[in-house]
Image 1: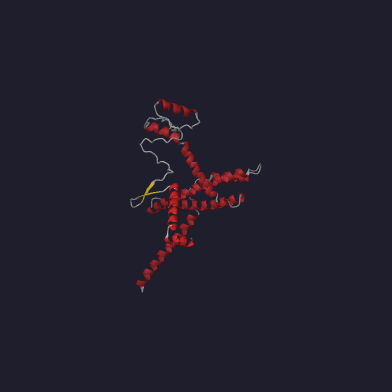
Image 2: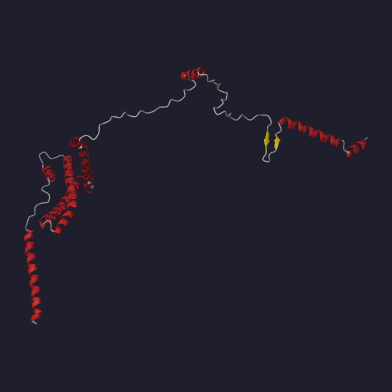
Length: 278
């Protein structure tokens, strides 16, 4: 019986001591103030001071600008927390940092959540629905400021690198490309047309009349127009059939008609009828 009570008593003493230690540690940690992760929020202080100004009151456009600047600071802090939290968590697991820095980051997250809710509420007081897009506009303004800063610092950065490393190469000014215009032939009524004809005649090139076909340089003549005279047409079997002209066809028809009429007149029945009539 004593052998069973000793382990149970030992486990109870250990668990109770852990509970007491946890209670006092939490009580002590609750009253401890951690160093803030972000030192201060000057944009929020400026907005609150402008909002409390009554003599004379601040203009609405000035208040909106101060609120947008406050939202821009909040966006930059959110980005920084997202970048720092995984690294700090990894260092905390390895024991490289203490709990104070981690608790300070968690406290900054809670404060930033409350700050975002307050900014959205303040934006909706100016324009209904502005709170849903104010942080998107703030992010675009931050990106624009970064691009402008890089552009403005380009000349100074180039001079500093030239002083440190020297010029890489000489600057060569290339001429701008000029457009090439191909002149076309002048129209017939233009004075340049007569000058071109005169130059061609002086060079020995015969000038042709407007209606005369010109022989191309490859010694191939264009096809002639269809003649009114009858031409022979080659059939698919290789035989040539002459196409009769209209005058020949009329004469042939008249000859065949006269031949038929004489044949009918000289027939035996016709002669017998003629004899009986006489």
